[in-house]
Length: 263
Ligand SMILES: Cc1ncc(COP(=O)(O)O)c(C=O)c1O
Image (cartoon, rainbow, N blue to C red):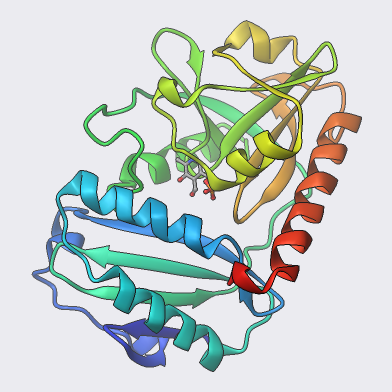
């Protein structure tokens, strides 16, 4: 049974309730995080709480994040689901929510379709509940026969996916767009930048069309090869650089979880 905690009260997720007048529901006014649980232990919990804190500060939202952390760890203890996701939400109405979720089933590689998108600026870098545009982009991509959306600005700058960071390989070198393009400061991205030789560079559609490999990176997906962008099939999915990135990330996860301070 999947469990949720609302302000510290734990119960079955289907029975968890918050008031309908919460602006988190009415206006998408709130903050969230999703993180991976490996062997029952949350990965990069400090980084996710740090980003949650930055989102709350950006939204001018006061939230009891210390209390949420205690409640989330209590939820994980009770849930006992070794391989899962932990979703953290704080709402404008003051609710603190932690939800245990199953890992989504996904194909081994993703075909992505470009969707025109412009970062909002006022919310850049914040992981807010205002994700309707991100969710819609995924549906638009599926209408085109793809698995996922890839955000591209009206000026042709390739940014990220609705819930993941984009990496591509050209001339054997790994690249990813810079944070200054208005993308989210992904925790997986930061780990990969520490582990591997990655060039942060703006990405155009031509770069994507001539890429040897490309992949999705996120807490939920880790490293997931991209097989095609629109009608262009990438030569390798996964290619050697993507496979090496995934291995390096998995080793990093193991190292961090082996350190008692990690959780
Ligand atoms: C827009 C966006 N970009 C990138 C990511 C990947 O971030 P992380 O690696 O911290 O999971 C996410 C996570 O959900 C996201 O929502």
